[in-house]
Length: 136
Image (cartoon, rainbow, N blue to C red; front, side, top):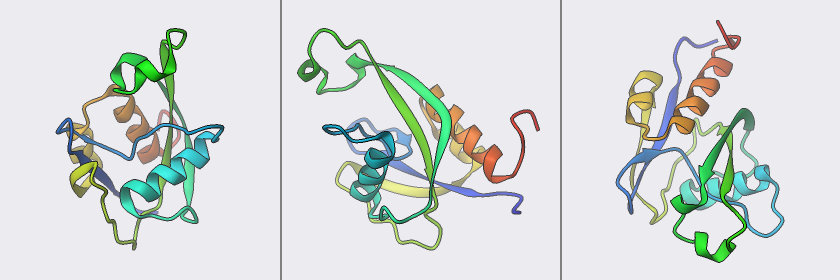
């Protein structure tokens, strides 16, 4: 077991803030299938990499998304499912959605993240990787 892991964050080209890989499902994709597709599109990390589904699910107001008018007037909140993916020893190639990426310690990454749900997911992932329980 390691004492510390590094986490990749991406700098969004449109909004200028740091976050993990993010995106929505298309058609009838499962959350895992969407996560694998978005990971490939945004970083070049393939779907055969090891993915870990987290308990963290963030509720995001539909108005946060620029395409929200396409979803009509009946959808108010989008569930954001969270995953970790093992990108160690892989080359990251970012998409045009991002200006940069970096590897950060937990303490660095938690300070850079903007949204509370992203911070909760990072906390959970770090706890799990360190082999700690939820209160350990």
